[in-house]
Image 1 (cartoon, one colour):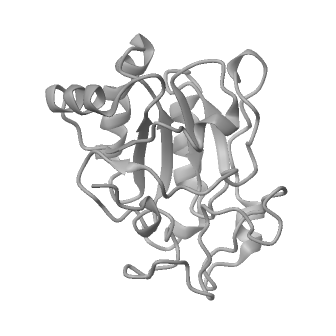
Image 2 (cartoon, rainbow, N blue to C red; image 1 turned 30 degrees about the vertical axis):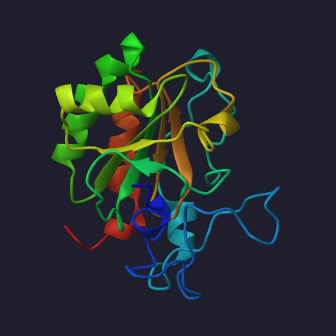
Length: 215
């Protein structure tokens, strides 16, 4: 069954579980601006969080040089909406969490190697982090489903044969991981086995204003 990811992930800060579209007072932080889709801008955080806190937060240094093998969207929101993907795992509510969006394929050895590490991070930070994996690059859904049955995990697993989001990055390889803060901005991107990936994720989890006062 193909259920829009929008209802579970795109309402990251809106807090409206039954809404088909983000409410006026809580825009979807993972959506591009409807007024000017060619120049996406970050959606506003929830009203109780001062937007200046996101600008002043101590985010990780962007990945660059040889470590970046795709179009650089660091410091920018996702270039297109999520929503057309097919759920391969149980549907969960990821609102109020940092996201790691990981593009992968079963035929890629580095992709398979990185999944246990991502699953461990998902389990360790399950109250603040959701690891969302998206497959569909040159392989059928049935193959991905079979792999997940043989290698179960706790992550959010999706399938998109059109690779609606992934193709925007024009990546030269897989896997490709995005670390997205709770205001919907990509704070770091690159290989999930890069030595800088975990430190960058820890910095985002520590710096994200959404979590301030919860400790």
